[in-house]
Structures are given as structure tokens and as C-alpha cells.
Length: 199
Length: 199
Image 1 (cartoon, each protein chain N blue to C red):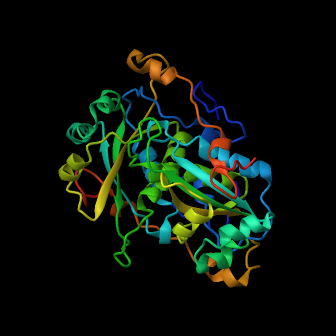
Image 2 (cartoon, each protein chain N blue to C red):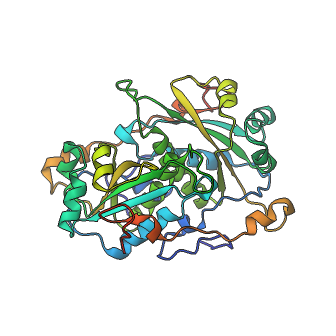
Image 3 (cartoon, helix red, strand yellow):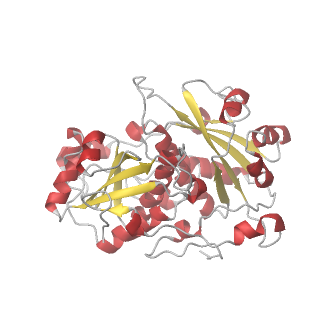
């Protein structure tokens, strides 16, 4: 798999699909092929979840369906609308609050949506697609627009699409050219007690 | 990559690493090599997160460090202790409640821990390791045992290790031989409104 300028620079070897995943701002307006989108959703489907509850739901809006796409775009924070308008697909993620088997609260529902979107992101990367997730969403508007029941919570919007050729989109070039950074492992991997680094 | 009897049976093509990931009960007590564990943690490190906050922390306990391992094992629900006792590594996941940049609540912190563990699971699969996540954890005990500050929430424990040879561990064979199942896409992928399947 080809590396690119935004490929991660890990301290320990990681799989190319994980190293090559990144969150671009500059998308190129090309539609996402239906079969690729289905594979991304299928990957999400096979994630692990507590008691196999699969607490995730998704509402999909494709760029080609203009009304559908505009409706979701308008649920985003302005700063996100500026770049997400060029993505091929926008997708609202939703978590079920309660276990379907007994109606009790599912405390890991949002975490498990993260597992599903983790899978989706890896699948997308393997198909040459990019994913950029957004927390900057007007959640109450999304709930109203899509008639999401009180038993469920809208959570994020995920942009899926093709990355614009490098430098083509000058508006976002600076953000997309910035080096990627992460905390070192010793700052968040501990052993025996909080704050004791696991050498 | 070799398929196995628990490989997913997807309706649309998905990457082998996603199809081959599953959550076994029967681990074989073999230790996890340090370099493999580091690669798994490194994969988690490169996950996406809201404002690149990286709200995840982990406490690692290796089977070889008996006291360390027993301490974490005893934070698990009894039903989980029964099988997790044979995993090579147990790892408590922890979410930071607040953004470090401004002290405001991070509503996607638990979701983003899910993204990190999604990466870790894929990396583990690529190295021949299996991962089984648990929500059945005594969280207040874990908080106390590991002195986790109020600013952070313990979330899950992740077992990482080698799967036992098929049928070797009769106690868990039935659970590990059961077919895997997932809801069909039409039950959770919608368009335009909640409940409207995205054909």
C-alpha cells in the first residue's frame, strides 16, 4: 500500500491501513461508488459490541441527492460546512441508549459506535477513500430533522469521500499540510497505577 | 490472510482484517510478545479523536506479572474472570471527561476510546492476536485500585492474547463455536429519516 505525506510516523510498527488513515479537509466532490459505501457500512456492521447489541444506526446522505445532502450539511457547525460540502457522503451516527433485550441502559453504546466507525474508517482506507469525523454537529436540529426517537442519541457526522489532489484546494491546504502529532505512549499507557508509565 | 471458522460472513466485501477479527472466550495462556503489544498500543495511538484530544488512557497487566494480572482480573465480573484468566494481557481503558485545552466536557471521549480500541483490534488481528472486550467490570473498584482521578472514567477491560486451539478448551467451546450474527444493514442504515432504509 502506498504511503503518502500524511501517513503516520509511528514509534512502533503498525499496519499500513492504520498508518495511512487520516482526516483530510480537502475533498474533491467525486461521488462515492455505491459498492464502496456498502462495503464501508458492512465493515461497521461486523464490529464488536457489548452483548452484540450493535447499538449503532446511520443516516446516509449522498452528494448526488442534493436535497438529502443539503439537509445534513445544514446540521453541521459552520466551520465544518465549509469543507464537508465537498465530501461524497455525509453520515449521521446514532447510538441506542438502551439494550433491546431488557430495556436497561447500555453504558458502552457510544463507545461501541466508535468501534463501528473504526472499522468503517479502515475499510474506507483500504478502498482509497478518506473519512473525516465531526463532533461539531447541531444535535438537537439533527434529532428534529430526522425524527430520531428519544431512545436514541445522534452523536457525530462522518464525511466520506476522495481526497482532493494535493494543493488543489488552497483554502484547506494549510490544515492538510500540517504534520500529524500524537502524545507519546508513556503519557497514556500505565501499569499498576494511574500515572506509572508501562516502560 | 487465512480465514477461520469464525471469519465473518458479510453481505458485501470487507477487508480480511475486519472479517477475521472476532472475540474468543478460549485463550491459550501464551504470553503476548512485548513488541506485538507495543504495536497494538501504537495503533490505538494513531486513531482519530475530536480536536485530536486523544482522550484515551490504558492500564496494562501482563499474565507474566502475576500480582499485576490478578489485581486487574479481580476487577472483572465473575463470568469474565472465568475465561479472561487465560488471556496474555488485560488492559483497562479509561476516558478523559474534559478537553485538556479548555477544561470543557468532551462529549465524544468514550466514542473516541472506541475508535482507538478499533485500531488496536485491527492491529492485533494483523499480528495473529485476538481481542475480547468486556463491559462487565467493577468500575468503582477499578477506580480505587488504580487511583483513577475524578477527571477520568474507567470504561472497559480488553483481553489480548492467543486463541486456544479449536476445541482444546472444552469449557468455552460451545460459545466459541456458535455462528456469528449481525442485524442486516436495512435495519440500521437509513436515509432522509429515521427508519427509512437506504436501499
